[in-house]
Image 1: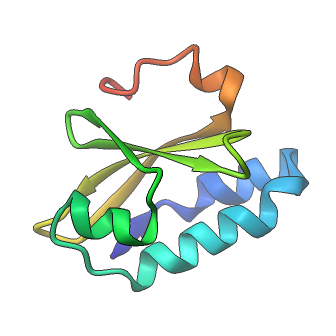
Image 2: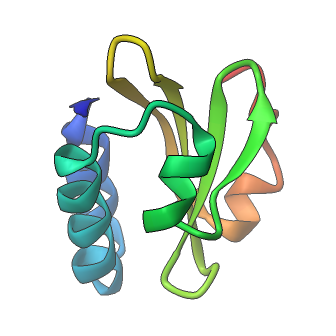
Length: 97
Protein backbone atom coordinates (compact mmCIF):
# COMPACT_ATOMS: atom_id res chain seq x y z
CA UNK A 1 0.00 0.00 0.00
CA UNK A 2 1.09 3.56 -0.59
CA UNK A 3 1.05 5.49 2.71
CA UNK A 4 0.56 9.26 2.76
CA UNK A 5 2.05 10.99 4.80
CA UNK A 6 4.97 9.57 6.75
CA UNK A 7 5.68 13.11 7.95
CA UNK A 8 2.99 12.78 10.64
CA UNK A 9 4.71 9.71 12.00
CA UNK A 10 8.13 11.40 12.04
CA UNK A 11 6.72 14.42 13.87
CA UNK A 12 5.00 12.23 16.44
CA UNK A 13 8.16 10.18 17.03
CA UNK A 14 10.08 13.39 17.75
CA UNK A 15 7.60 14.20 20.54
CA UNK A 16 7.24 10.59 21.73
CA UNK A 17 10.52 8.72 21.06
CA UNK A 18 9.25 5.61 22.84
CA UNK A 19 6.79 5.07 19.97
CA UNK A 20 9.54 4.88 17.33
CA UNK A 21 9.99 1.11 17.04
CA UNK A 22 6.28 0.31 16.99
CA UNK A 23 5.28 3.10 14.57
CA UNK A 24 8.10 2.32 12.16
CA UNK A 25 7.20 -1.37 12.27
CA UNK A 26 3.52 -0.56 11.65
CA UNK A 27 4.50 1.60 8.67
CA UNK A 28 6.83 -1.03 7.16
CA UNK A 29 4.26 -3.81 7.44
CA UNK A 30 1.54 -1.63 5.94
CA UNK A 31 3.63 -0.57 2.95
CA UNK A 32 4.29 -4.21 1.98
CA UNK A 33 0.67 -5.27 2.47
CA UNK A 34 -1.83 -5.55 -0.40
CA UNK A 35 -5.17 -6.23 1.33
CA UNK A 36 -8.41 -6.01 -0.61
CA UNK A 37 -10.63 -5.72 2.48
CA UNK A 38 -10.60 -5.41 6.26
CA UNK A 39 -10.50 -9.18 6.75
CA UNK A 40 -7.17 -9.39 4.96
CA UNK A 41 -5.93 -6.32 6.86
CA UNK A 42 -6.81 -8.02 10.16
CA UNK A 43 -4.58 -10.98 9.34
CA UNK A 44 -1.60 -8.67 9.92
CA UNK A 45 -3.25 -6.15 12.28
CA UNK A 46 -5.79 -8.14 14.35
CA UNK A 47 -6.73 -5.16 16.53
CA UNK A 48 -7.63 -2.77 13.72
CA UNK A 49 -11.13 -1.30 13.99
CA UNK A 50 -13.28 0.17 11.25
CA UNK A 51 -15.03 3.33 12.51
CA UNK A 52 -16.81 4.41 9.33
CA UNK A 53 -16.15 6.77 6.44
CA UNK A 54 -13.17 4.66 5.30
CA UNK A 55 -11.41 5.32 8.65
CA UNK A 56 -9.51 2.58 10.48
CA UNK A 57 -8.02 2.82 13.97
CA UNK A 58 -4.77 1.04 14.82
CA UNK A 59 -3.56 0.54 18.39
CA UNK A 60 0.15 1.16 18.77
CA UNK A 61 2.34 0.11 21.69
CA UNK A 62 -0.27 -1.71 23.70
CA UNK A 63 -3.00 0.84 23.02
CA UNK A 64 -0.88 3.69 24.38
CA UNK A 65 -0.93 5.41 20.99
CA UNK A 66 -3.39 5.41 18.12
CA UNK A 67 -3.22 5.90 14.38
CA UNK A 68 -6.32 6.77 12.39
CA UNK A 69 -5.96 6.11 8.69
CA UNK A 70 -8.26 6.50 5.74
CA UNK A 71 -7.78 3.37 3.66
CA UNK A 72 -8.91 3.01 0.08
CA UNK A 73 -8.49 -0.68 -0.71
CA UNK A 74 -9.31 -0.30 -4.43
CA UNK A 75 -6.42 2.12 -5.02
CA UNK A 76 -4.17 0.74 -2.24
CA UNK A 77 -3.72 4.21 -0.71
CA UNK A 78 -3.54 4.95 3.01
CA UNK A 79 -3.94 8.51 4.26
CA UNK A 80 -2.67 8.98 7.80
CA UNK A 81 -5.25 11.26 9.36
CA UNK A 82 -4.14 11.18 13.01
CA UNK A 83 -1.26 9.95 15.13
CA UNK A 84 -1.59 10.60 18.84
CA UNK A 85 -1.90 9.39 22.38
CA UNK A 86 -4.93 7.52 23.57
CA UNK A 87 -6.05 10.65 25.47
CA UNK A 88 -5.73 12.79 22.33
CA UNK A 89 -7.68 10.19 20.39
CA UNK A 90 -10.55 10.51 22.85
CA UNK A 91 -10.81 14.20 21.89
CA UNK A 92 -11.35 13.69 18.13
CA UNK A 93 -14.11 12.48 15.84
CA UNK A 94 -12.47 9.77 13.73
CA UNK A 95 -15.10 9.88 11.00
CA UNK A 96 -14.45 13.54 10.25
CA UNK A 97 -10.67 13.94 10.43
